[in-house]
Image (cartoon, rainbow over all chains, first blue to last red; front, side, top):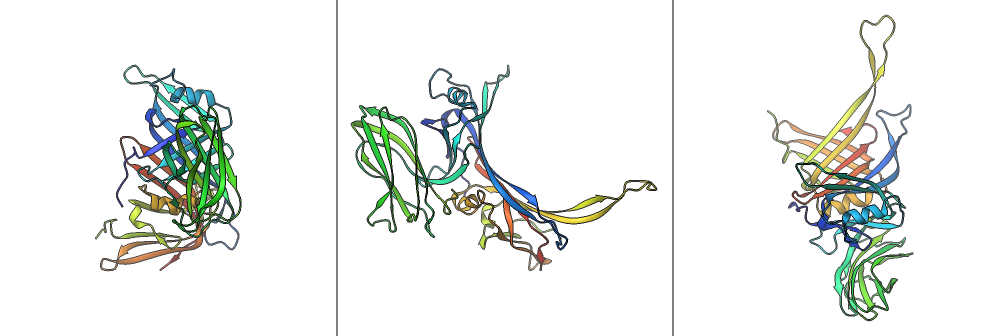
Length: 247
Length: 132
């Protein structure tokens, strides 16, 4: 199995892509365990309790006045819940795994200014409402209505619904209200049905989430039902299916 | 004669051979030392308690291994873990098997711009394995 270079990773925080100010992104899932060893045990035994996800990024203080700078984004969110943070790995593939912290906040922020080197910025995002694992289904600037490429989520298909996250990173033109539909189908070339719809009102840039219940088919795609007067909308969409992707 | 690791160690997780994704696997059995020093002791004394097994995995990250370990890292699902060490022609093969007794306690992905994407995982292995 060929190694994948580190630049095939991304870190998204709400509408901002901080990848170009980040040198390292690290996702950690930890599951606590409790000792359940009994008098009949031949070696120690434990049981898993709950998972806890954290995302850490190390980067640079390179641009402190622009709204989307690493420093500004992290500073504004320190201790403030409500953000979606996604770490994507293997981004050379559209359907790369993405780990998402739901309703998270900036947990730690460290600025170091050594005299003989550059100013660095390290930050950690908190657990928030829990971690999710999903797959990226779209990463494009959408200039017209229509379908993005369908992603294969594999079998067995989901039975307990899931969530989808839409990161709207940029809008050109005059947006009134756009809508993007997450669609599903049992076969890649079949007739797709709606799992859920993102409504993106003006000004559009921001983060959005939908949840859906019940059965979820193997193939999922993002459909731009309306771009609402905009000439281009830059989006990243991640879909998490309970029991399938790890959501 | 010592045996090199490459080609002489395998790891199977939940019936899926993940050896090709790993560059290191380390299984550790730590015996609890139970303090047994008494007033007549001339040095600290202890007795052996139960063993505690833990497996650490390291490798280059890729989507196939993430599809195997990633979902379980959020659920703590109990899986069967099988480790083999050695080769048939050189000293034989030993196999350790934990049947539905292994679960992830940590899963870490690290992407650094000047390096490759790497993973590390730690699994708790419940009880003593079947050694064959």
